[in-house]
Image (cartoon, rainbow, N blue to C red):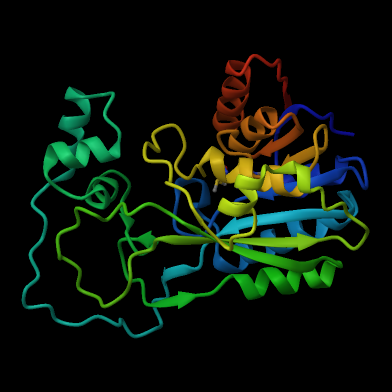
Length: 313
Ligand SMILES: C[S@@+](CC[C@H](N)C(=O)[O-])C[C@H]1O[C@@H](n2cnc3c(N)ncnc32)[C@H](O)[C@@H]1O
């Protein structure tokens, strides 16, 4: 069985089977979004869906009765489907931003401590341009190529969970900061820029405690009772490509668990959930496929003066 307060390097589809049954109070995670990030290479849409289904199904056994699984994910706003017509129009006023990848790299070399926001200000362009030049990301949530239509993901997650015996209990919306604030009008679609993500809250049937003292009256008022959470996204994604902010994890952990409860993240990435769990005096358990990220997560936990052990599964 996996030990708590450890981060394991391995595939969740295998390692989740080694977690003590009925032990997890909360599993909070953000899986790959199928947006073409490095850690998603070589995976088809069908394989991605079946991975999500398998991970969700495995949660039934390990969540304690009355426990929660909270998934942070976004719809795919620019799903790449070569068989679909390309919904794109002529834009006579289209002016391409003149900042090149080389210019961004040079600015990074001269100012290694600058985050994306500062680089954008320095280069007089938007943060999205910086991100796109460095990572090839499209501001509508996908790679910069033929993104034809929107793919909703929540309905599939709900079905996978329902089939596994878990019920959709609540949904919250994370509104990110206006990273497009300096954007020039260079778009050639009529689509919105991606600025929200979803939190799907699933519940394993069983009694649970509604402990009003988990949050202060001010916290209840400001976000505990609110469906929309305004939290700035992580600007500098130089250590991991898709970190969520620690405040997001902290809110979820405070809301759905009590002190000493075990909080799992089967897509641990850079270790944000573990850091938030430690901050909130909860125990953590993490699983991450890529060794470099599992090591990074351990390092960040160690920096919080704990003694995590990296284990391989
Ligand atoms: C969206 S990121 C999570 C980022 C994390 N929330 C953070 O703040 O750093 C998804 C992570 O899941 C990892 N991953 C992908 N497939 C996995 C699998 N089958 N088992 C475990 N981890 C996986 C990826 O390597 C990536 O680090």
